[in-house]
Image: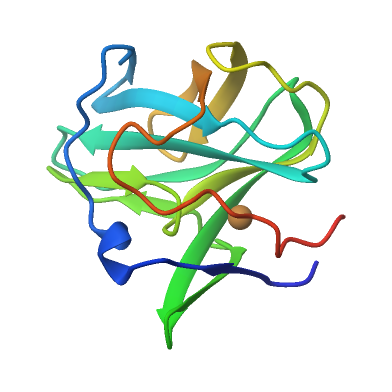
Length: 166
Ligand SMILES: [Cu+2]
């Protein structure tokens, strides 16, 4: 799979900001709190959909998001992004995404994120789809992503146009 590229309007969009959304919904597994999983409404031709949420680890041991499944797409992948010269490049997060002990990770446009490859359904804005996220220590947890036209916070445009079709 080719590396996708996102062009950011502003690097400041990479900053993690607190969520404030009327539609917030949370899930819990072990010491992990999964806050407001959401997906950006995408054009019907988009070969991928982004999945975003904030993961809080209230435990004393680090955990790791290592993968997952969803009936909404052929494949669920974890991607990480790096910024160079104002361009964000994304690639599969081979080691998964670490959630530090007593810390939090924000999966968001322009940063590390969940990528649904080969979407089978495209729920309208306000629609939902289920996914099971797999954590190294906390195990599997079923969550529900809500589709939004906009990020629940100031963030980069959800431009995954650089992604190659599988
Ligand atoms: Cu991606």
